[in-house]
Length: 268
Image (cartoon, rainbow, N blue to C red; front, side, top):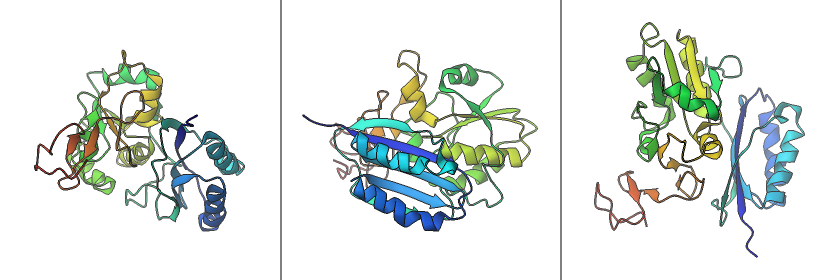
């Protein structure tokens, strides 16, 4: 009988001054459980996606939650036919998501969380500016209607776009979203530090929205990029039909014979 692989994504902004000492025992625990994926550790917290059989993933998560600082980790789950990761990596970083704005601390100040069930109602407001906080290649796979695409190649480019295009005197309500929520925690913290007052973000990101909202009621259009071999997920959180061209980084449908932008077939 085929056993599906559980993919668990999670993060938390929490002070971890001993993050360097956490690396070795965490890597050992993952290897013992035969779990693969990537875990990022920094003084500001943890950011991870791991995959394996459910009992193995649960063993790793239970170990993490034994630390009181991580006891309330929120997990976003999806299933796949095989493990989308080749090995297990636990990396030490300056930031668990790189905004390169050292004065920004989501553990101290962050935007207003909006549950998936209330998201449709919020983004239908006429007085709201909706910003997709992801990179351009992700946005081109799918997004919410009316969302601004900052056109970034990396997250640390987002502040430059926000500074140039958003004004707290003009944009009284701003909502942001990203894949799992982590980038929006930092992005909303950045806006609040710059004088914006009503700043919202989708709790759990697109992945939790797709999990909680029925397709018939969903406003999501397209597929959602993920950072593993699945590349994209459909509304059922299953591997989608869109991938990335290795040559020009455009979104390509798997059934295409060649990339419509550059003609390459280097994506099959």
